[in-house]
Image (cartoon, rainbow, N blue to C red; front, side, top):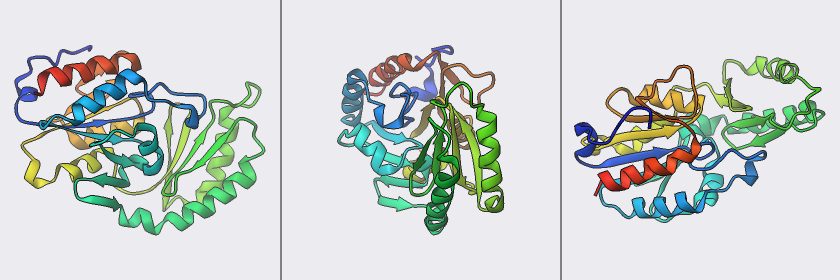
Length: 254
């Protein structure tokens, strides 16, 4: 870890609500979303952490809730899918009410985008119910991503008051224009009665940066991989180092 956490007094008291991104954090990024797989070592660590009374594990992912649940499938773990817009937590299932209202429009947009952008080979359009992802990692080298984005921006422009497009690792995310992110989802799970807990978020992408800023300086925030600037308090050099961080949590929170 680029900045030491071990021995930090704030992070050794009380209990931990540990938010973890999936793609690029718990699991390596795959060429296609469906090919991503949770490494056996990280699965075993999650199982042990989920069994600790002092640790609550939340998988906070851009994937849909059902998708990320199927990828992790660890008992005792909570989930925040679609960048926190849908939650399966200690209070049961929850969906952001405004995002739910916009889901029909998401379906319509998905249909329009497929009809127009489907001509670009290698572009994967993923309808996640509450949001859309457009993965361009597999675009042929003779098709500039900027040219595809220009078409996307034109198609989305009439809906700009409802949705915005954010940039991730070789992916464009079409999300409702709401003041909500993974950090808000973690705070919702934390609940006022659990404020003595330390909130944590570990992630590798721009949507995780939103969560870092929402959680603020009192949280244990960790950026995975290289980034010029980050709102996180700590860094991990690459995805493979996440298992070492999980081992640190296992040692420090008994």
